[in-house]
Image (cartoon, rainbow, N blue to C red; front, side, top):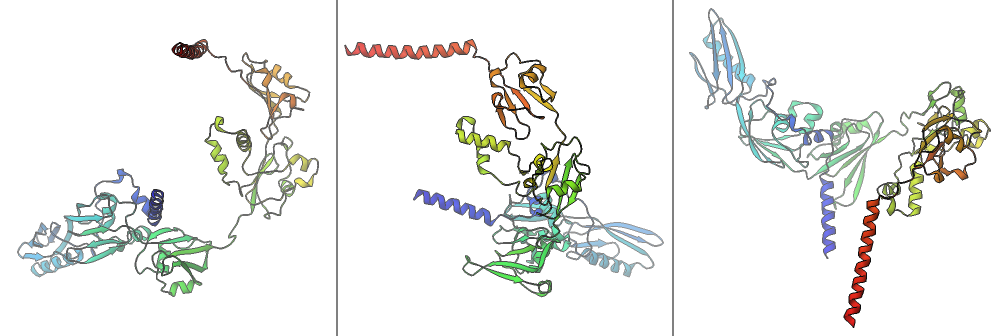
Length: 523
């Protein structure tokens, strides 16, 4: 019973995690913003047609005639400003444009043949309340020209599950506004980023319903569901189609009424998408597929010691290695056919779970078979295609004339006309290759064995395969091979040996004493 409960809890946790796994680049930037981005609001320009004036806003008024009259007028707590020789004028709740027009109209009635200039020189502070799925519900004071973006970017910390497409703003007069902040970030239109007013209540809901878009779209991902949104608007939110999108068939996958089985719907033409009113439901997935083999670059690259290295266009899986070498002008004189190889990108990133497992296991914990596999896999070059250049181009063995695939890379290195000396020799390094030289000859040229060399365990490392071969089993050395002389490990230090001997002697003495005690006690 206990295991069933644990399993159910794990399953529930995974389900919740998947349900709230919202992914789009705007959300990532907001949730993971650096604390250094916090600071005071900037004084940007104000939209006179949408900014609402209120208590604390201050106007500069200039009346120029025979004399110039200059004064500042601030909206008081009753919502009015005082104009000399005129009296109070109620402005609270007006847009900035309407407020300036009302002031101008009143002044014109009382001042003749003058020029009138009116500007907002100081904005008031307002108080808003933030609650819902945020790090902390709080009351925030900010400038009256602040928008939703200022609140989110400067003052509050959101949770990964905060809904940014269904932000609810309740005004002091009871008016309710829905804000789709992701649309503002995607389109940059201020209608999705309204001004905040005094005593606004801003509520961030927790993500509960989502829709998804996958495939050939600019910004695919999982987004919050918005009631009433159709497929056309959602695709716009996802940035629109990629050039390679197959837009003649758009698939919509939708859960049935039982919330288990799924149905598929298709929008088959661009005109149908533009004219249809296909409303989304939460849980929908929009699939936009790619045009098959769209602008696939069927080219390969040849590097190294050929006459004309560089990219070449091929017929995928048709052009042969010999044809490509012919196109490149052939090999240069110092090209190493023995070390030349073909690297194939297709399939080179395959994951080997066994090799990854063995990488984190100590050698002592491996079986002999596991260790042999690990060594072989370590020497293996990912993506290397078996092709013997010497057999093909010298012996004319056409069985080695492989066909090439797109993105193949053919590498022809320079000849390695030397033998590399490694390990416990007096002068390690490269020695020019001579066919008549033996392993002993190269060791002599390298100054002989070092004082701690393990002479009986010399190995040859083959240049082409990295294989380690004992000296007695080597038929002949080849250019590029390495001779490795291992180090004879130092003998144990006296103190270490002494401690071990003392420890064993103590244990033996204990056993003897215990045995004697048992014998004496039984008499």
